[in-house]
Length: 246
Image 1: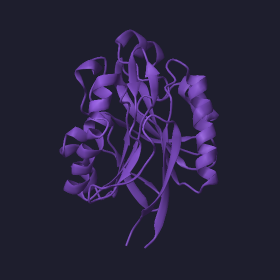
Image 2 (image 1 turned 120 degrees about the vertical axis):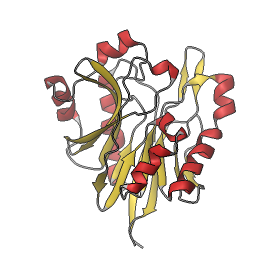
Image 3 (image 1 turned 180 degrees about the vertical axis):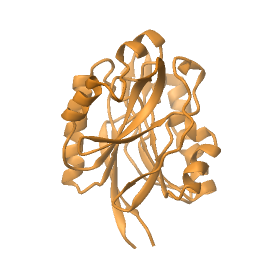
């Protein structure tokens, strides 16, 4: 069976520091390219930081048609894997928790988070499930909390994809982070069993303002089994050979 090499980054947060985020993207993209990865996922809200208060989010949000965003694209690698990058998007005065798909410095498309937490009231909900393709692999995107809703990955499966890519940010109070550190994959594994999809997640790690992020950054197979995972609480790059096609 053919395989495709996929990758996910478990990183520290770069809040309100796009330059540092771009340097991290370029560094990890080079590493993933050297290992032959065709697809590389970064965490939720990665570009500007997972900013959920409206003032901060609006200050740093980017319109995907703007010169500022074009300058971001110009700084991204012109070779190597297709990138899925979490960011804060502005469009017509509304804010979205978005993941952009970029190939060789060109915007391929976007997915907007459809299921929002109470703490994400600054954002509007997305309403589409676009499908993307790289080297014969068709994939869709769910962002973090989306995977709590069976219909989110189900739409991706119905559109003929075999992988759901899941940018996440699970920075939580420490007690909650410890309680949830194994639950994320249990929920996502259930979605995989329901749909027959593979799942690739990317999460943050580190500590901030009394909270901690442990991950997980992992690959889950269609049987709901975790088949690869980075150590919790440590930055790194996960690379995995995923079966692709018949």
